[in-house]
Length: 364
Ligand SMILES: Cc1cc2nc3c(=O)[nH]c(=O)nc-3n(C[C@H](O)[C@H](O)[C@H](O)COP(=O)(O)O)c2cc1C
Image (cartoon, rainbow, N blue to C red):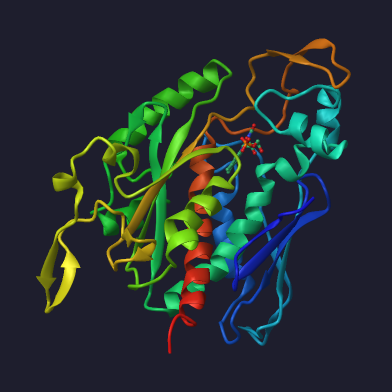
């Protein structure tokens, strides 16, 4: 199975399956001298952990990271940084009844086609358990970003079903303060109430709903990213569309921008504190694939989780008609966008750290 990693200079490789002994990540290219302790990684993992609200899967899974290499006396050494996260609380026997069935909306049919073998226990590599590794690596990336000019990455639930939160692009302090205090990782209290009602209905019906996660980076150094094939928005799209259940990506005005006129969309330049800057930021902080210095912002759409209590028609791996019913007590999220928030932050941080390190070789 190829392609288990991300990055050019700050490069991660993740390993492990959801019902194996552990999952983990190896970070190659982490600069030496970064103060790092395991508690900082655990803190990030706690934000992704399920069971934090009635609307995320009800498992009791306190993730604890173990740093296996790359840190000596509280600092990174520049050697490969290896982090393991033990899998606890996984009962594989629950999945026995569905092991012969193609799972609607999940990945066992395509994995079977490609590899001829599938780890049916919780989805194996296709399980979102893998995203814990991304969050662990993201915690390291965020520390590096803080070192380079206190660059901060934030994400929040911008939409669940048809309920939209007010845009937070211009409300940075509110965003930082309220997102993780909200059970839905949504800083807009009124929208949270409406989203909760929607999720209650979905849970009562044994169904799931989709959602959108917005991300913002601020402050952003100028001139990160490369033109043409390696445009920073292309790298962000690649990194974020690689997340499980991701179905859409946009940067800046995104799809809405396609309905505007050039005269409305162009970000005019003005003089601000003696230097040129954009008066507006419809471009989302990027021109020609390179950062303008304005905040970077975009959104990722997540499909409704495939694991639902409603039964659906399916086919066995032998090709006979069957019914797919999620095993009693199996783990699932009614809206994956909620727990995707720290994962989106992690991926954005990984893209930016890689861009920062690459930028150091841009010119003499
Ligand atoms: C944080 C997070 C949690 C997820 N939890 C679930 C879940 O509980 N049930 C489920 O069916 N899918 C869940 N998913 C999505 C599946 O992993 C994903 O749909 C599956 O791997 C198939 O990949 P695809 O949807 O990208 O095609 C989750 C995704 C994320 C990002």
